[in-house]
Image 1 (cartoon, rainbow, N blue to C red):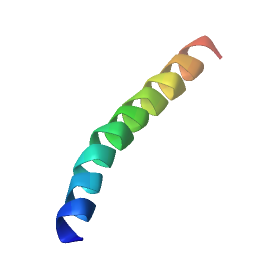
Image 2: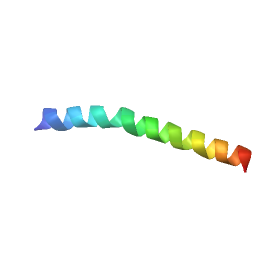
Image 3: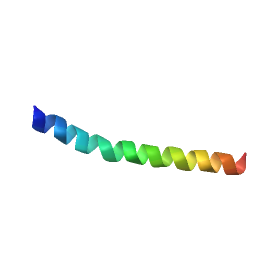
Length: 34
């Protein structure tokens, strides 16, 4: 069970980091154009 949750965290963290970066880029672009 612990190994499964650890693998799940390892799989989710890159996705959340990517979403975080994409969100920041979208906010910056939105501020530049508007």
